Length: 308
Image (cartoon, rainbow, N blue to C red; front, side, top):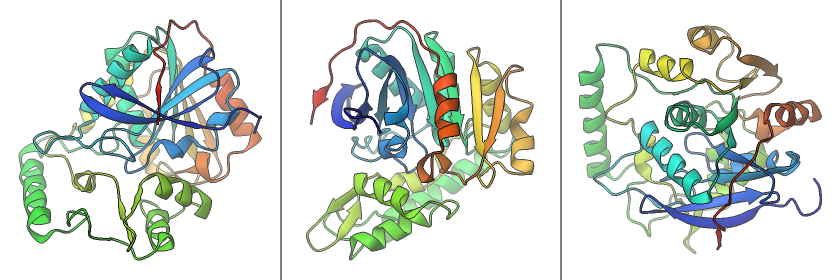
């Protein structure tokens, strides 16, 4: 890691909400918007962002995640809402041209952002192929009913983090890190789990609890259909590089389900590792590929961020 490339915690108010950001590099570098995955946060890019040459990387904690503000009870966490937030954030930063680096759910946000913004020079997907959660055509009504039942049940039983704000979920830091490590595919390395957990934990003195909105663990009442998710992928017009883990979420038939929706000139690359291969053990080959994929472009004046 080069001297002076350590991350900085900053913040910005966008769309009436407070967003915590992690940034790396010189603000005069090529702008890169880094979008993390579901239940992750900006620390997802802690090990690769400092190694991106001549780039200014801004990784927000998406709404409800990490240290960013939770949405109101009458709002939600739909992919298109995240994309609208990111479009407004880019405008606040004054970026005219920029690249997008997305992981997992972040690639779904990026696919919708591509329909909102004409300023994207290039996109890189890390173990993601657009919207991660979809419903089958004809199942929208039943899915909405189920989502509403689960929310009412969680509120009534105070499960899944819906307990009071002073009630600890974990007796120790290590217990929280172990839970984070075993989520999704169970392949996340100990150091990666620690980085993600530390940004998402509140120390209550008598224990720890997650900062993120517990509603994130429940399905949204309305989700994109598979056909809609593919449509958002198909309309991406900038150069797209898809980097997938050989032991990640898209090995085997999972990749085949979406590959035909990718734009014709998409470049697909496979890397050793699981769903968080970019955080577990980023190789020199991966970093070189990222630097080649994130095209350089002119950028406009930027709003200076607020240090926390």
